[in-house]
Image (cartoon, rainbow, N blue to C red; front, side):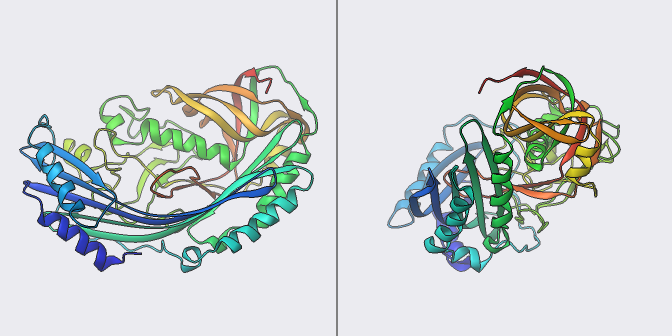
Length: 448
């Protein structure tokens, strides 16, 4: 680890090389480790230590950017000079906002020594438990742990630093006809319930000895949190950001203050909550703020970076992802749950479909938040309040806005981690309940 003082020394040094009117430096340093297994044995164990320095130089609203993963010799100086030179020739950005000054931000508990010190032997012992639980089935998966330092500084005196850890496990069990999937994650490697995850994933595969087909149509559904997290994340991509809202391509556009979902739907973003994957500031160095997006079905707000906030005379909510072209994004989404159990949802269903998770989901229409995709890794028929058959995967096409008008039951919320990242191990998570929804639209049956 670099530590706060070393990180500041690197950023201050980089700033000293700049001749630009304004300069921002983003520093990422990480150690990441991965144990991967397939066909019920560990086949890869690796570790990586790396660093990335991003320079943004601004001259007369012209922006130049450069990166380097070296901090030795003249590497930093050369990268800064490159960014400064580029800024002399790029096209001016007419609505570019000046870099921010220093802001205070709240500290969060995002670092756990137990995760940082996790060893290959410890990961291997946990993986062995997953392989043993699979028995005659084939077990696949990955188990990464990481430590990440992020520091941001600019020529106006901003300096922000955070140290975080993360751990996640993906577990896939394969049988002759079907598969089952489970995942879990936390900033604290010791908080993950590995035994329950392994047991429930294998149990679900044992329920899929033979796969039946069902006619497409509208069915009541019970969606596990994995599927619900996919729904909420799509809402974030399609409409909870201010850029989409301002460009009238969000399902929130023109509807602020109106009821657009059911009374039992409340969604917010909170990067400071330790019930999620907390992180205290965004990639402009602005402090994170909790933002209520949907309150009892009513459209209440969207998230802002500094550029979109300036267009409305507002303040940033701390949701920059480092690219003003893509706009702000809510990376710490929550949906309020209730006290219904999944068993109660199943018992309340005369004929419906139980869905573990969605796969290959893609947007169709952002205004109605319509998406299409497929079920995967455990789809079951519910008849008269109980699961009776395992089903072949189904394709669906559904407006999420319409669906969230028809939610009848919600379970307590749980954390679903973002488990796919490449390069910089910046971890996110979505905390959501399981849902029972009436009249979900399935449009086809897969033969796979």
